[in-house]
Image 1 (tube, one colour):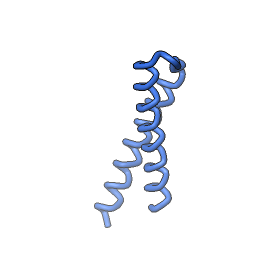
Image 2 (spheres, rainbow, N blue to C red):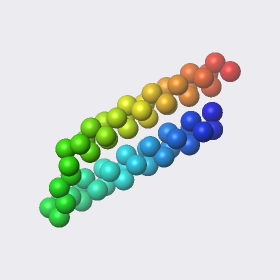
Image 3 (tube, rainbow, N blue to C red):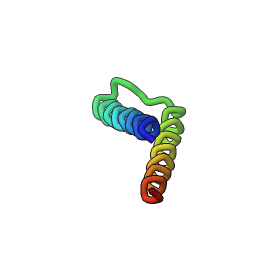
Image 4 (cartoon, one colour):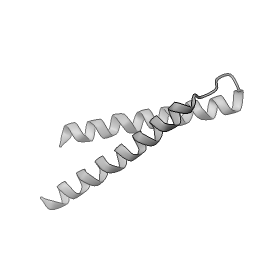
Length: 62
């Protein structure tokens, strides 16, 4: 269970970093985010949500 929590935390950190990069790129116009990165971020969000739900129900079951 700890490995799943660690993976969820790492994916969450990647998600937060991508939000910061996206905000900085919108404000400064120094960097344009590629379109594929949006799909990757959506995949990370869904993966974090699924992992969180799985961990929650597994711990509730115990």
